Image (cartoon, rainbow, N blue to C red; front, side):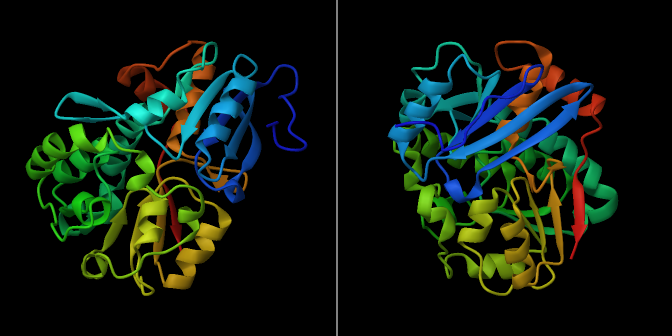
Length: 310
């Protein structure tokens, strides 16, 4: 296996961030950006669900780029102060020796909390009904929505396990997470998260009434799209990774407003794993930053949610 046709290293003087994703290669992107005077190449390479291809790309690029992002998978999720590692994902990245690897969890717990607070003057969370399609992979947002007073349904059991069991409080989410995560994290992640071709398919019907009930649909773009009914008229979508086809899809379903927690760079909004890897490369460190350090970079760059009214 080789690198994609036409792939090139970043020009001299640039820092190069590459996200290797289990997601669709149709969503690949390469953009140049300058951050605080430092030029970057931000790149996303999808493997269409091929885990062997992911391992190979990491091996070929290890030590040749400044930071890796891990897309389409999480190394771990955190609930109740405890970290639960996905064992199969850890195996996929175990061969990386030289380049720091980030999965976006640090930014999810900081940037997305900030975003909820910053959006309160616009959305008035106490007046909003929110369906968070998957919460355990972004507990920062889940907790911030609860603290802001939103009426939230956490859909982890509905969409992740296929059971009609809406979780309606952050306390209940923590209890369910404590019971389920020790088991779930031992299974292949693609059992409950769409990778490869699954990201292009839809499973309407599951949880439709919760979509209809909600004013705001929050969480991972692929999850929101995968289980969405045809009619999303008047809904607000709060998410992160967005491409032009995603915008077209949302407009076609009647979405009123799209809010992204990461800024638009070129033709798309990159995922938190890319942004987190960019911050680490910018800092010059070889490992994930602390929450305080991420918050410092977020505020230094004035990262704010981007609101798109359709």
